[in-house]
Structure formats: structure tokens, C-alpha cells
Image (cartoon, rainbow, N blue to C red; front, side, top):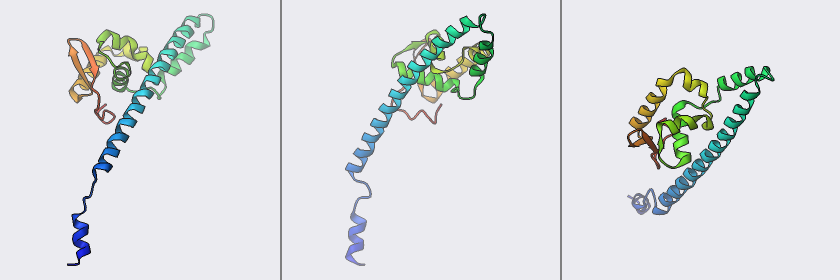
Length: 154
């Protein structure tokens, strides 16, 4: 057997430098994702306020009602489980069920959808806890579980 082959088989396939580089990239990307979620939260909150102002104006401009309805029914809204997880991750602290529910519109989840199927909200919370995306830190209060690849889990 040629000596070159023996040398090749003794070389490590991975180096500590490669692994450290991947870990650093993972942390960097995780931080970027968290920052984007915070930005989404801020923009969602702003859009929720704007929707409130527009709703108040409906009696004076009836065409707004149709437009608001179309916006709420649009397909670009995130699923409820994603909205809950993103909200808890963006806030970075424990939130009660009521706080989560009242802040979901700031994440782009329609209040009308919440009102249409209120039991699904509790089902979504339970599913996220079962998947390990969030945890119930105290009865009726939840917190995001960091450092978990939640994109697949939601």
C-alpha cells in the first residue's frame, strides 16, 4: 500500500477550526434571525396601530372596510404557531396567555382569525410546548426555548 494512502486515511475529516467556524456562523445567523424577528414585531405593532386607526375611519370611508378585510384574509400572514413562537422569541421574556393573545396582531396574525376559532389558540400553545419550541414557565405563562432549530418544529 503506498505511503500516500496511509497518510490520507490518518488525516482528520474535520478540524476543530472548521467546527468552531460553523458554530460561530450558527450563532451569527441565530442573532440575525432574532434581530429580524424583533424588527417584524415592531413593524407588526405599527401595522396593528394603523389598522386600528383605519377601522375607526370606516364610517367615513366605507371602502376601507373591504380593504381591511382583504388584508386580514391575505395569504402572506404567518401561521398561528409561528406567530406565537416569533412573539415570545422577539420579546425575550415570559408572557401570559392573555399577553400573548393581545400581542399576536403585532406579529401579523389577524385578530379576526383569533376570534373565529378561539380554541385553536390553546391547541397551538399546547403543540408548541409538546414540540419544545416554547415552555410553560409557570401556569398559564410561556417562554421561548432558545438555541433550538424551531423552523422545522413550528
